[in-house]
Length: 124
Image (cartoon, rainbow, N blue to C red; front, side, top):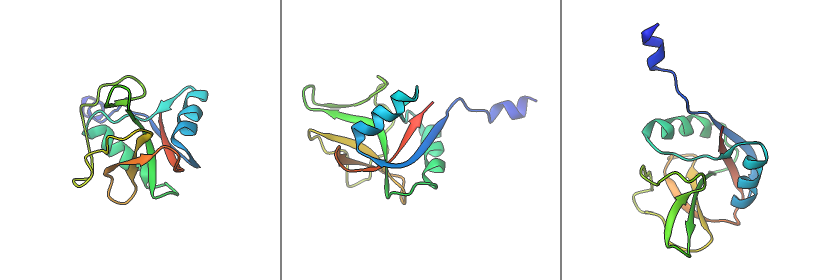
């Protein structure tokens, strides 16, 4: 009994295999009582990688967005940006109208223009 408890997780991610802009993805998740996914540690990253296997787009939107007004990246759910998995050559472009999408093939994060359309991941 104790052994099985070690592998239980409270992380519940859901891939939505529809191509939408970042804002439309956020609205979809919230209209369905969820939020765009946030990744706060390696365990959540691994769960996201499992969900990515069913993606029909090369990238999948996450809930990380850049605010020009304040000049930093933030998770839409209000969670602090502590864990990062940027592509080593990326590091997150600090530009307006950019959000983060995770690459289906290498699982690294990339900053992408908000108006591009990809599948997206919600957190329940």
